[in-house]
Image (tube, rainbow, N blue to C red):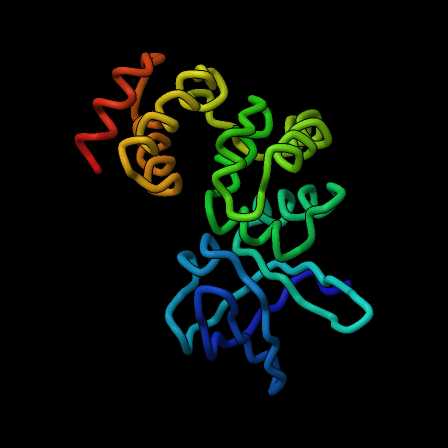
Length: 196
């Protein structure tokens, strides 16, 4: 198993990075979270890795933080979640948000990720709820204590008003993070409309 790759970052895109280690270029599949943390090209870089082996390919997935790597490994342990889906989840939200949604049972937020339906979101929560709490991932208390029904209702209302699910979800999530109290559905919608 390759634990990490360290060397010169020679190429980076939102989906992969190439690190030159002693004349060998490793193509590493990354999430948007890792991409945003990468240094500029031609700088030294160290990424934690997970080797995914299939019949037709050996793929190295890379992570800037150990929290993201931990969560990736938990996600791919769930039946029906492969490395690409796990990477998509980690590109849609940061590891702390994913951990918070899992620990609080917020299936609606997980379903905002393309390809994650109701059954898959519920399976992720059932299989990982206890495991997430045992990791060293920071779980945001505001997201954990927030009323999931309020979030779902506000999201539905905003979608009826014509906003895309992804845009509305990001806006609501930002409001929840800043809020110190539990907001009603109406307050959530009003505050979200101000920033959309």
